[in-house]
Image 1 (tube, helix red, strand yellow):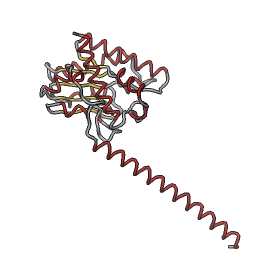
Image 2 (cartoon, one colour; image 1 turned 180 degrees about the horizontal axis):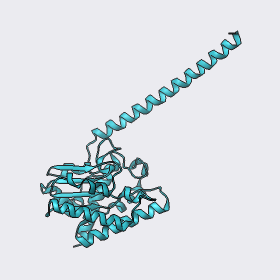
Image 3 (cartoon, rainbow, N blue to C red; image 1 turned 135 degrees about the vertical axis):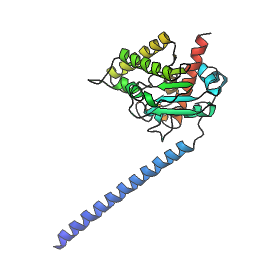
Image 4 (spheres, rainbow, N blue to C red; image 1 turned 60 degrees about the vertical axis):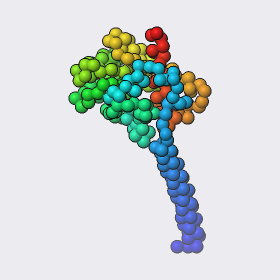
Length: 257
């Protein structure tokens, strides 16, 4: 190998080594930052966003939480905590629930998945069902209408009533999402409306927390609360979602008095 070739080869090796070092340093930085966020989230003392108030305590849902009744939370990745280190949207509520708590949820689930797994839904006193965001976001051959979604939710509730005829059933409106095309955004509104009408018809509790979630986005940057277009961050997003559920539940009681 001539001297010129040796020099060129040496320069290439050195350059590649420098690039590799920078790549490794960036990777280690991201890994350390990710672990730091995870540890912060897992070690956080969760409470509803802004702290518990007398107003947030004033709802049928909170009465059930304090009564010692058993709870089962049903849903998708937001209930499961798939992207929030296993931390559920209801994590801040656990300290206020005096009965035992179970959950049946999985990433990507639609209402049909809860129906398909109805045989493993345990008997409890209260069921809180937060489902529908994946149903609304799915378009094309596998999509369903808002009416069909509401019918499936009604079917699920009937199966739950077979498990426990005296159960209190709460449906949470499909969660807030943003940044999608007009069709998907419109479907979200249609699905929430259809679910609300079904709950009113069959006397199920319906909680739509989304307006209260959006109000906080007007005060602070959305990136504080959201990991992506629909998953909340831990801790702030989770705390906000729990707050909004209790706030909506309170407003529902207040409007009926």
